Image (cartoon, rainbow over all chains, first blue to last red; front, side, top):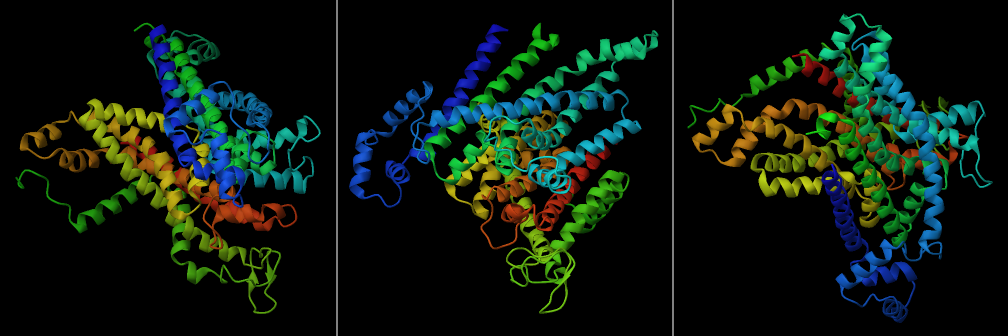
Length: 310
Length: 295
């Protein structure tokens, strides 16, 4: 088990190193381009040359990469070109906002999708299963921006219950969180529900469940004590991998609702060629994604005794 | 040599097979609804010049409500017009061409690359498999949209770059599926027979193995097409899509977003259009999977 964990963490670090090299080459291969982006298109040749000298951009590529990597490892991402402040000052508050959004989404989505998945998988092919399965196909087919439009029109335009933007300028506002969370949940829950359903349906056909039913245990007890335990191992992995999907989803939702989060920051930085913010955002997103995948792998191995003891 | 290999399928038998699979499709109601939605949009895209009531780029009459008459020229704006006076219905109809050209193209590219990678990894095993699998693990560990945003923002928004970005991000997923199928199929007798005949590795992979892996791949392709359509729509919505003025559903939603609260018609109909097309592909995939499991 320890060797397995060490291997997974090694793979995680390797992934981050490879991506950091590609990212660095993509954005900072040519020092002249970096200087132009930082100083603007109207800077003079002398200004750029001076900036390059002062910031160590005349060193060979590999020296630059390692010093960049060293700074990154201690959380020094450089200065944002657009905001003129260190990237970390912008990044961490934005990341905190996204964490609130993500946590709220998970708090709603996980119970909902697990319950629906279990209910559908208990009796495969029954009417309840068909309704739940078709609904989940329907909701995953509507892209986030489209459901954001539909929900906004309904709750903001026609009913007037909720605010149309969620910038949270006056501090935390619960009402502003509802629509973004709703959009993310509606788009994401179908996938987890379908995975849970498949896992539950498989367990329900297994011999030990048939035995439990045949020996006369109450149906409720069969489901709660025997089926759920095994059926919920697979969804655990799926839920951890949803963090990766959520990082994509928040870009759309934060852009739509003007939510001051991490996804919106990455998008703004990309549109404005704010390269140091792009680098920081990309590496943070990758770290969150890879860390959640590693945890999913370790957790799955731990939860599944057939793997744990082999 | 030729007498051992199966006779090449003629055009007639291919048609017969297509008809047969269509008959299979009719067994699943879900698949039929999906095929209907997809077929509808394909017909709309093909006959766009005939069914589109106005020129999608012409500025006719700004901010007309749905159902308003075209005062100067005659005719009705069934779905209204936008800020510049372009007919929304015509833009949606022509926009179906954009999405139905780029989405299958990008999916096809992703499949070509993914299939070649998957065949090589699964058939040769060894270091080729290790390298390709590790590489695809790395690409797949990235949140997809983060990847798209960075690639498009760095290399610029154009049709070609969108296709390349989607290929880059989706090929590893295809590779994983193909690799898994090949690992199973490579031990079959007909592969051993072909090896004994002295066929080349790529002949075996493409002619003996690949056709037998088509079932799961077709289901996955439908799902992936739906997902690629979402991606193209999202990129358009984020302002990273195809450059204007050509009509593109995601781009329309981005363009009219600011006016959504005053003129909902501009933005609702493109949303319905894109959702229905994606739903079509997802239902088709679900129905096909159901049919393939039944046999």
